[in-house]
Image 1 (cartoon, one colour):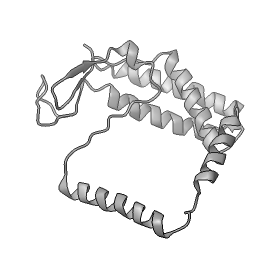
Image 2 (cartoon, rainbow, N blue to C red):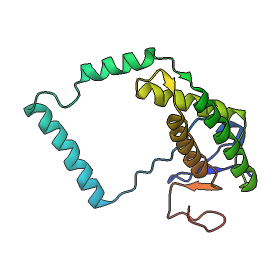
Image 3 (spheres, rainbow, N blue to C red):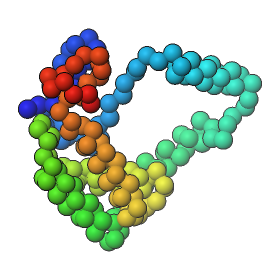
Length: 171
């Protein structure tokens, strides 16, 4: 069975497992109407605009951020031997976990997830402006990937909780 996304407009978007396996991470973002949350968000946004007019710069200026991103893009981190061992262990753990707890419609774990784990680890190293991929970066990437896979492999991701799915279960 193919995982299905159900939108409030009742449009159903099937995503086959081979397509899902091409994404490094998947997150579902819901915009749920809640007057309390909506009020806090509105006050925060208005406060940001008000402060922009009265204060000059914050802890990080736009120029500093642009420089940081430019510098990070230039870094091509190399995988340390310990990080390589961690990559192998994490990949094997992903394979074991997904094989042992196969969920209908899940994409399974393939070499693509190992490549994804490596890309994410390198990206975390860049964020730290580090030219070496360290084991802790791999562990962080593994946790991100595992949480994303767990969320994405659910049989149906119901974006409209008031519309019941086939099994009658809430996500």
